[in-house]
Amino acid sequence: MERWSGKVAVVTGASSGIGWSICKHLLENNMVVIGLAKRLKVMEELREELSKAQMDRFFPRECDLTSLPSLRTAFHWIEQRFAQRMHVLINNAAILEHFKLLDPGNDEALQRVIDVNLMGAIYCTKEAYRLMKKAMAFGEECHMINVNSLLGHVVPEHIPNRGFNLYPVAKHALRATNEVLRREMFEDKLLRISTISPGVTATDMSAKTKEHMENLGESPEIYELLKPEDVAKGILFILGSPAHVTIAELLMVPTGEKY
Image (cartoon, rainbow, N blue to C red; front, side, top):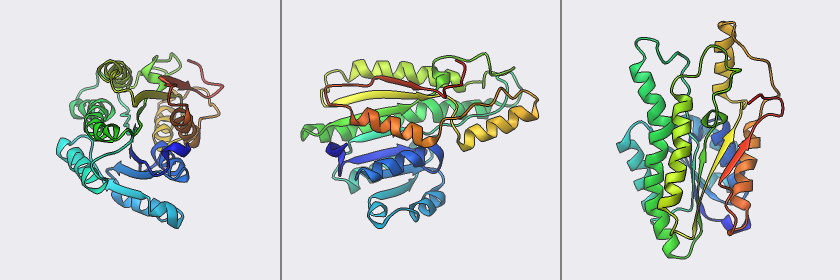
């Protein structure tokens, strides 16, 4: 990870769970980190837990991934603040809504699932690529990583009675998007593209899912869940691999999870 010291990373969904753990691990490796999330106050409070040196390298910014003006405003600030270039993008932000696809009255919620889990990542990628092109012009290495999900590979049968509506659809589409981008960016020899797909992980989102399914009497067997830091260490493994190696796809699941 030494070669990333001082380089600029952007992490979406940085206010909790996997996103905040990724931020901390990047900061521990001396990177400059911009955390993007809707909950700016939460990120500012988390920043106070960091060491002084890490606080100076962490920049929380409010960003609503369902709003293109909000997203572009955040990246415009990054462009102005960091000499018009950045080096690492971690598309981590995700939401999961708990209803059936065919339930009535859920049109706006379904749109949010697509806007955050798919389109937000795509628009962040477009904005980041513009800045990465400038970094690569100076001979600087860049890396894009999408935090996907096991549900971007399969819809496991152990999810009783529900497939989490458009969440796995968006995550499957995100995997396909990665492959499209890999082809579009093939000539960018200083840019690597990766995706990491965790199974069930102990986050606020998974806790709400477990509570919801228990209320329905549909809770699957209990696993020893992945921890956010497990996923963050997976990110470090991807970033830390030699420049001539691309970890194109990393699937990690709890040892006891069926898939």
